Amino acid sequence: MARNEKLFGAIIAGKKDAAVEAVSEAVGAKQDLEALLEESMIPAMKEIGDRFSRNEAFVPEMLVAARAMQAGLALIEPELAARGHKPLGKVCIGTVKGDLHDIGKNLVAIMLKGAGYEVMDLGVDCDAESYRKAAKEGAQAVLLSSLLTTTMTYMKTVMERLAEFPNVKVIIGGAPVTKEYADSIGAHGYAADAGGAVGAVSACLGRA
Amino acid sequence: MKITMKRWVEDIIASSDRKAFPFMAGTGASLAGVRFADALRDAAKQAACVGALAARYESAACITFMDLSVEAEAFGGEARWMGDETPTITGRIVTDAASAHALAVPAVGAGRTGVYLEAARLAAEGADRPVFGCHIGPFSLAGRLAGMTEALLGVHADPAMLHAVLRKCAVFLGEYARAFKATGVNGIVIAEPAAGLMSPAQCAEFSSRYVKEIVESVQDDAFMIILHNCGATPRHVDTMASTGAMGLHFGNIVDMADVCARVPPRVIACGNLDPARVLKDGSADEVRGKTLELLHRTAAFKNFLLSSGCDIPAAAPVENIDMMFSMLNAYNEKEAARVR
Image (cartoon, rainbow over all chains, first blue to last red; front, top):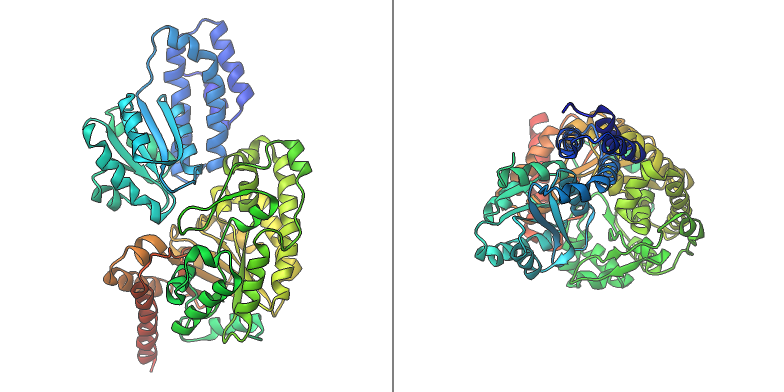
């Protein structure tokens, strides 16, 4: 199926109504909805993520693009689920214990949903048990976010608590977090920004 | 200290010695033996922290604490205190156009704003160098009232509502800035980190135009504004400079030499040692190396003022701060010897 340029462009431009219209047209034309998702919608989110990483798009553009994506997705998700369509993977994300900052976490959650992942958003101030519970409920990747230098050290505690789930990948990010820190605590991945988070998750889960 | 800040700026530019003005409230608390969170609620304790820093370090200026919850709390936002940290605003008090238009502008002095004004007054009394107060920038404040995600979405989705909130933020911050000026401090650092999340054009529309109003209402030869935006990229320099602030302060994400090349030569360009990775977690060698590297990279720019990229965490070892100043002195001595 060729890319639906109207839908692709609407998502990148953050035009929610245009995205919904394009999806509605596709549904009405009985197009392959899984192909619509894979060939038009997910690539649109990847494109805006790539532009963000290149400083060609900024957080407002990411947010409206994700909003357009989610509006379009809402029209086809029931149908896709009925046909047995599975998300790329199941991940959980939360800001670690002691930290209430959520803008980065929210952005990453939106990008991951836009990329086709099922996302369990654990919120903020998450203790290790929250992540462990999510892993027990099937999260294949656990994403830890922190904005404070004083709270990022809790990521090590979470790593230790998740030791009983050796197949669960832990990816960390946030303003004070570095690749070196990620390596030092044995995290499986590190994301420098929201766009990079999708890539890090995909790489860790073998979806790249 | 009675000083013409225009002269302070000129002296920095004319001086053959590099100077430093890091944001190190946490270190001040350590030196003064004050619990950091207590200093956020007690003007005398906060002023004592500022004094302790001035007693130990030859910084070019002092600054009261950077606490980005104070103003939102004054508007009615809920400040959640956790441990010995600056509190975080939770929830949203602006949720739609109706609540944006109904939002009441608080009086200066509401919440803890009175504490910060008093801390500024006490810190300025008898100071041997310029003292800066600090308040949040308008877009960063709007984000704390409406939710940061919602504010950033509003850039495209509902700019009218965003501007309605920003107008009220600017009204309050203008009054607050005038109140700071009346305390006797020599300037204000306006902290506007969230503006760096937007494009330069969006930053111009939703932040710089409002910052400019504040600058124009208080800045003069004797009283200066430093605009801090640790999220800014080099592409944001022009819009930051358009505010007219006599100083611009940058975070550790930028190459300071790249930034300095874009800052007008008569405007002070401050930054940008990494407060967490270098100043808190770095070894002595790393602090030494990074400080010298930054000084060398910015050597061509007379308007450069060494600083941290943002507020240095309270847990940063005092030894690391000592090392930063020690390396500044060593650099200056070496440069002076080289010129001789």
